[in-house]
Image (cartoon, rainbow, N blue to C red; front, top):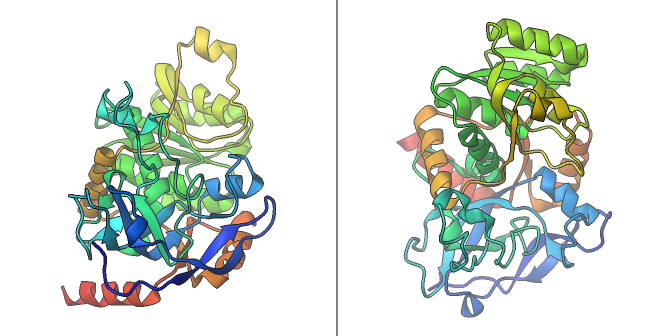
Length: 369
């Protein structure tokens, strides 16, 4: 089923060659007639830039080229596959990243919280499959989330990866209300979301960052204590111990790629606590003493499952969680956004408004309600 008159071509920003800028040009629009039975075609309203996009452009994932960038997209459903039952035409959607999990392996048949780790799938948007830096994108309905009232396209797009990543990291810490969560790299796109999720779940937050902009953002978004890691590891440890009355953080989430970040995350975590590694440097280095003599449990975390994603959206809507955004209008402005993001001076997330009319319409409807 499809909305009438989808155009035959669309504008998209693609990686044509590794380590080169995006090529913005016209390509064929996805066809409803060739849609996988569980897929959606989404008219993209807003797409967001993610750190992973820079990894794709460098060739870190050996993506097939050309490939349309961005796995953070939100928009309106304009076509649905023949087996889709959870979406209708016109629904507002946060695109799922995963596509076509096998649904048969032990991961898919195991606990829901781990099903997004299925190794037998057709790849992630913007990494193995064309993503959201386009006027239209295809995503798997089974991995996507319908947007609740109060969650606008500009908010939903960065939540598609940054939100799903930060929310799962906070949940993986398995803390109870009133306990301390440390966030290393608290002042970035993931970090300021992690702070808000943690506070919404009743946790106390120590934000740790190495940039003036990041420290300011951490405080702005509600961290109970903000610590400048440039003071040195010992000073950071002392500050954390002072704030937590000698305990250390009950768990810590590492969001920073810095070489010393995982070590610092472990150091500020209380004995027998968890360190959740979300950042994706080539190597994660942790001193032996943290593992053996302090029994710090190091876990990795990737993305929310679809059920966790819906829980996240409900938490966002209920608690008025926001994303620090930098808006750019039109795919033609993507090079400017990339340059700004790589400067290190941009606070929060960079967004491309692909469909300005859809965003304006949404604003008008919100103002009436």
